[in-house]
Structure formats: structure tokens, C-alpha cells
Amino acid sequence: MDIDKKLDIDLYDFDQTIFPYDSGTLFFIYSMIRYPWCIVLLPVIGVAFLAMLIGIIHFTQFKKICYIYVPFIPKKRAVIKFWDKYENRIQPWFKERKRYSVVISASPDFLLEEISKRLNFDTLISTRHNPKTGIIDGKNCRGEEKIRRLYEVFDKDEINVVDVYSDSLKYDKYIFSLANGKCFHIVKGEKIEFKYSEVYND
Image 1 (cartoon, rainbow, N blue to C red):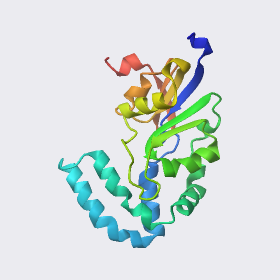
Image 2: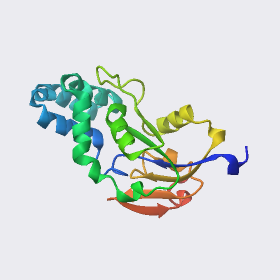
Image 3: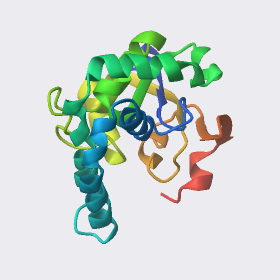
Image 4: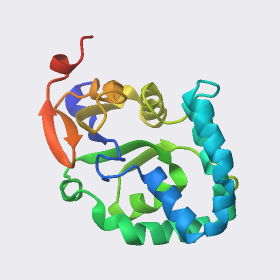
């Protein structure tokens, strides 16, 4: 298919890119404060964190354990209140976007779906979680998994990735490699343009 007939899209990471924090971590802290009975779960999460540090479990397993608190909170209401508080921290330059926007993130679907509706993301791709338990369903949407999930939603021959935005040069090398336009490394909210070939030795 001719590239001019493809759908032009821009790819955006979410955490520390268009939102200045790790949204999953911030929501965890928010929930511990707003719903203090969840604090009883902290020892379990703490043990899991230590197990990850010494290599007994991997990051995705740790992340699954982190969300054991979700069944103990009014999730829908908590998410709405969370974004009522933090929506104004979204980077202004993202709100001025002109091209079809695909936000692709490792953060939970149940957390990002609300802000996606508010800010009219054209497409949201995020880590799937069981709606009842909060536990990750499938793989964490990180690194190479972002590419797999992107092509699960779009036929690769029908899209043209123009610009890519992310704070992580390490984990988002894979989506940066798709850019046919510009790559932007986000540092403290600022967009720093770079050439893929000058950062990565593929």
C-alpha cells in the first residue's frame, strides 16, 4: 500500500511523557491515603518488592502483586476522583496535537480509560487488568510488547507512524524505531528531538 494512503499516527508513551508522573504508582499512593484500610496489604507488597530485587520474581509478577488492593476500593469512583485531581497535570503540548494519537502505556487500562475519554485519545493501548481483581491479564504492555499490541490493533500495512514521544530511551527503543518522522525524548515535560540512528546502534 502506498504510504500516502496510510493512516498517519503519532505514538505517545503516557507516564512521565504526557503525564509527569508514573500514574500507576501515584494512584497506588492516592488509594493508600484515601482508603487507609488498604495499608494492611503493604507488607505483602513489600515482600514482593524485595523478592523482585533479589531476582526471585520478575517485574511483571511484582506488578501483579501490587494491584491486590484494587478489589478493596470503589475502583470506578476512585479513578474519577483521581483524575479530577490530576488531570490538570497533563502536558499542554499534548492537548494541542493535530495528528491521530495513539497512547501506548504499561499503566493499567482501568486507570487510563477515564483520562482517555476526557482528553479524546484516538486510540488507547495499555496493560490489561482483570476488571474484578485488578490483576494483570496477559503481559505488561512494555518494551517490545508495545509493538505487538500496536499491531494487534492496527494492520502494520495500514498505518504510518510519524512522530514518537517517550521519556524512556531504554524501554521505548522499539516504538522509537517505528518513527518515519521525528523522535522526541521527553525530559521534565520538555520535548527533545533526536535522531534514532544517533542514539541506537542497530
